[in-house]
Length: 443
Image 1 (cartoon, rainbow, N blue to C red):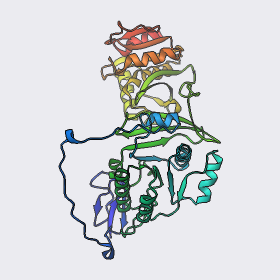
Image 2 (image 1 turned 90 degrees about the vertical axis):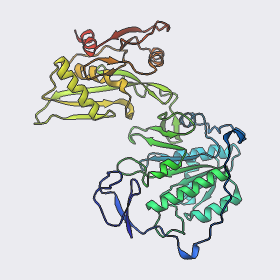
Image 3 (image 1 turned 120 degrees about the horizontal axis):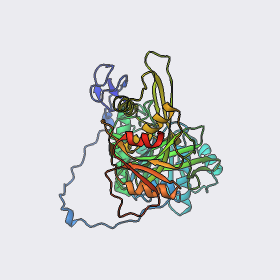
């Protein structure tokens, strides 16, 4: 027996409160070591190793396969690459199985041979979901979680697409550890990866996530796959965000927006105002998610605190970055947040890491503190430095053009940008420091 970290796969002979490898707390779980049973030990045949020159390699470029779900294809970079290995994770009940059932049904209707392997649901449950979604039942179903036996059958069937729901429930009988263990997940992923690459089969695997919001199992699982997708969202609202955090065939951090309906996840093409509410105290900014510019609102609430240490709460925004902005406003521009609770929320459930949101968050904080509304249809773009200067950000012209299409009339931007070669109908206000923005808004 040994202890394995459920986050990174680190092995220890005794229990430790903190993993020495990744620093996570309370993640070491006792498991049987993944020893191969002696009766299944086989002598590995030595293969001749060939060293090839890249210029001598010939290949035929295959077109991507379109699923017909526009947002799903967009996140993948324009469709599914044949032979790719894809991992999708998300909270329980968020819609992972629903989305993959839709993909399976649509591609099966197009004539592809699709196999849906589920060790969590019966064939009747999967068929009921297919009928509820209004899809054809041309998908092959496998309910066995013995991956070795399944792979042998699949080599005979020769499918075009394999969906495994989920990686934590399948196992290899050659290993002594139970399904869901670090060793089983790692070895099952290796088997599926080799199957996908050698047979040219598109393989999509569902991964459960931990309480920390990351896919359960060793980190090597994410290194093995070509694409890692996360399905996020609030179950009460019905909106779902599909985000690519790794993509060998397209842009990273691309997002797709869906609405959960009785017929499954519908692309949000007709829901362009998902991130805009039109509230007076909301500041509008534009982020680049993958290749897509998105207009998003941020709201702030500053209220008198009765606590010894005032609250600093942020939803969808980095709390450390929020503390930096508050410190800049206090130190450089003498706004008093000392005895104030601060709450910041980004609309639509997005988690913003783009520094271009700094100016919007800062002016929304000042607006709430002074109790003065922000002007409508106004865009704020710029990173705020520690001395209060406004720094330029990437793709600012693309952001301004997107704002122009959405009816924005004014835009506060960094001073150090050149827009002379671009014709924009927006009223542009170049600003060198954050205090200039506040003076123009709240004088």
